[in-house]
Structures are given as C-alpha cells and as structure tokens.
Image 1: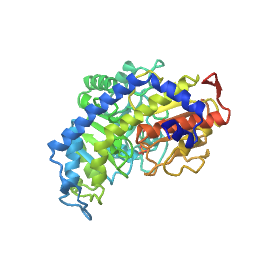
Image 2: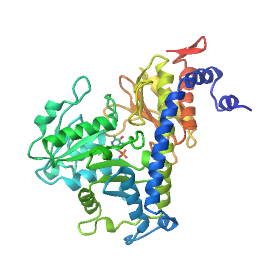
Image 3: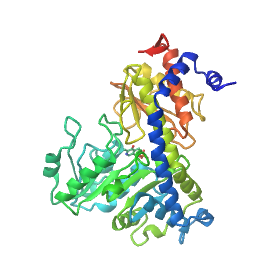
Length: 433
Ligand SMILES: *Cc1c(COP(=O)(O)O)cnc(C)c1O
C-alpha cells in the first residue's frame, strides 16, 4: 500500500487527495521558514533546560503543601529563561488561560486603579473577569475601572486615542496578541513592542501585560523580549506541547510575579506552596516538544488557508500572509458548510472520531456554536480542533494539530465532507465553490 491508498482507506476520495497534494507542492518555502523558526525555538528551550541543570529528580511528584519542590521551582526558572524574564509562575493550580490572565490582573490592580486595553477589546471570557459584562467577583466589583481604545478602521493602533486614554489611574495596559474570535489580524511581536514603547513613553511606570495565548513559539521572539512586563498564557495551548494536562503560566518582572503568587495561594505563602501532583514530566516534556508541535500546527494553518483560499473562500490570515499565532479562520458562507467542515475535523481525530458535532446554545454566546475536537486532553486547542459561532460570515476557527500529518488529514477530511455533500464541486481536477 502506498500513502495515497492509506488516505483512501481513511475515507478521502481521490479527487480531494489530488487537489490537496497539488496545493501542498507550492508550500515548500513557507514550510521551510516555519521549520527555521521551530529550530531556533527548540535551541532556546534546550538551552534553558541545560542552563538550569534539569535532571531526573526534577520530575518527582510532590503532594500536600509542596514545600521544597525543586522540580516545580526549576521549571519556573526554565520558563523565565525561555521567555527572557526575571521570574515565572507555572502551575497546575492555574486552571486555564482565563484564570492565568485573571490572576495577573487581579494580583496587580488595586481599588481605584484603571485597566486599559489600547488595541481593541479582550477575549470573550475576559469580559466577565473585567466586568464589561457584569459578573460576580469581577475587577469592577473591586473598584477597578476599565477603559478601551479600539483599533482604527484600517486595523492600526489609534495612537492619539491611546495617548488621551492614559491617565493618573492607568496601572495596567493589556494587549492581546491573537485575534481570538475577532476579525482583526493578530499582532506581530514587533507591533506589540512598538505599542509598548509608545505607552511607556507616555507613562513609564505603567505595567504592560500581553495575553500570549496561541502565540508562543510562532516567532523567534516573544512579547517578553520586547518590553512586556507580564506575558501570560495557557499550558493546554502552545507551550504545553500537547502533553500538559492542565495549567497556565505568567512570566515577567519579579515584583509582579511575586504578587501573582501571593494572590494565587495566600499572602505570606506565595510560590512556596503548591504541590506538583506528579505533573512535572508532562510540563517539562511538553515544553521541550512545544516548538515542534507549534510548527506542525502552523503548517496545518497555512495548508488550510491555501486549500480554502484557492476554492474562493475568504481566509484570515490569507494563504501568503505572515503568521503571529496558530489560528486560521475560514469564512464558509453557510451554516451547512460549517457543520460539514467541523464534521471532517472530528472524523479525522484519534479520539471520538465516530461522533458528529452539532451546533448548540453555549452559555455566554448570542448564537449557536459548533465545535469539533477529538482530543486526549479535554478542551485542548493545541490539539486539532475547529469551532465557530453559527452566524454570518459563518467562519470556522481552526487551530492545532499535535503533528503536521494529523493536521493535514483533518483539513483533507473537512474538504472531503464538503465535497461529499456537494457543498463544493470538482471541476477539471480543481474544486470550485
Ligand atoms: C484561549 C484564549 C484565552 C482563554 O484561555 P482558556 O484556557 O480558554 O481559558 C484567552 N485569550 C486568548 C487570546 C485565547 O486564545
């Protein structure tokens, strides 16, 4: 059996296979560039592990208070070195990305302080953390005010608006690297660096925080290398490498990270407590694999962009644009196509491949949402997954893939489902909308 036969056996038709292979032929240079970034970042991770003399005793489980947990403390030094920061907090007790961001904010904002988002609003779940949508325990309840400056119509930073918005109360300026469910492009690390410099010129002591979710290891640098005082993310996305079963991280200035630790546990205790519960091998090994896993997810995103762009669908980013995160949006134009696309991603999964994703009314959204995920870790979006709200422009957000070849199969299967249901048609060896 050759490789094509294997794909046929998995349910891909010959026409879809041939079309996809044809598209793939032109992506070699893009993939080479992605590999170069992964190679650099792999060296960065190994160098941080070697510098901190990682050894087998660091994988030992700890329980209870977790005093003298050298494995945990060393992992945090490894993260700090990877991101070029003074300190890091990397814990299974940080339950997800939203928790990590909420922790970083609530630890460093006091009553009377103001939080500014200078480049558009935050990710959906942060709206309740901040109190943009009223919520129990929000920053707003604690007397922290919020201000936001939207991007200009052309998608660039509104520097005049930002200058006007910064005032005596402004304590944290928060920038979200990835677009999330918004339609703006994701910001490059360079762009983030420029914005931070601008803000610090106006108010040097302001704290700049970056929501780095989905951005880790996509570029050579991280926001922490261009002036971010706190950089925050989830371990069930990029830096966990698919192996971390839970967790979040905050890297940055030591005084700020200390406050995060005191807020996470208790004043007086801080980072000294917090058992690792036997998860450290997956944290270390996941970080070690992360640059390569991210490169596979990026290849999948570039492949998907080109497959669907050539069929005439709008894709964000476009097939040729540079990448600043692992998210790929595809505007499919109809609910039927969204369901078919997600059905394909699900059918290609190693876990739960036999279930059919259906749109459902998810709490917090004003339209039904469809999600496809066949993951080893629940909700892990570094694993191949796709989701989107069922409303115009009927865009699916596609991300992840622990290996490039799995991401490739997922994309091919998404197209297969569209093709089988005649939601796209093949015309002389190419497929047209
Ligand atoms: C995923 C994500 C979050 C929230 O992370 P969870 O782990 O889902 O809580 C926050 N910001 C951005 C940009 C994200 O992509």
